[in-house]
Length: 294
Image 1 (cartoon, rainbow, N blue to C red):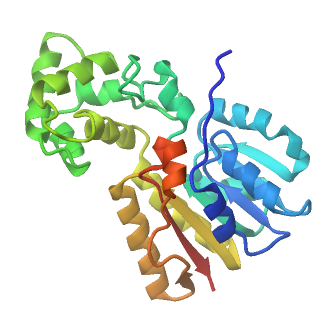
Image 2 (image 1 turned 120 degrees about the horizontal axis):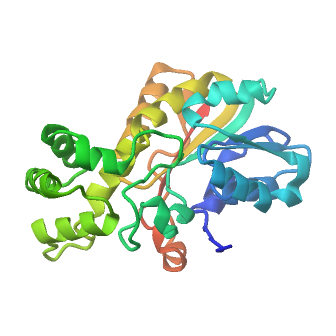
Image 3 (image 1 turned 30 degrees about the vertical axis):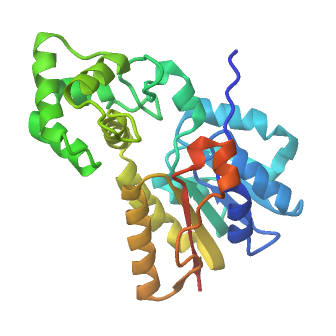
């Protein structure tokens, strides 16, 4: 079995900003391999517990193994955090001392070619966090109309969206685009990098991943569903990795604070230190925002 490792970003900052009640119940809504959950449990006394949620059954299994040393201080639920209220209720939890959403995709997803997330590894055009999800990147690329593909990649910041959408339609008329390497090659050909720091396919791959996994809808629903479950003094922390997500969190938190009953803990997002970025390049775009229930 291949060993996959994942370094949790902003771990110390998350622990410092999220914990307000030492003996409380916390939720790690994006469990991944269990890194943030382990950091929280290590910082909390034995009476405290964490419920970890992950949409990917494979990931939930990996985390269960990694978190065995914590025994019954940790519970693991497989599910989508957009249904966090139902999951928490099903686990017999009435109120929460804090919740964390880490919106980054786990290293396992990027490093495993069969999941189809990475530009670096050739794999099927999949990109599903949950393998039971019927929508795949293949479906979008080979079946969606021009207007939908163009709009999707444009809102994720791709300035060559029209040219790329046309090229995708022309290419799929000859034969379907089936792999990440085929799509990457098409993008490199149609919109080559000219002095840009990121790979020319980065924004298109991001757009596909966001659409396949309903990421923006799920984020908004997750925030709304967890709000009534948090106790006064409890905090919600959200780690984002690109500007679209960060804007949703920033505007939602600002709206919550303006409505009353909530106060911003972080006026500006917390970013990783230069040391952290040097040891974990995937941390470089991370931003943590925290809000507290009054």
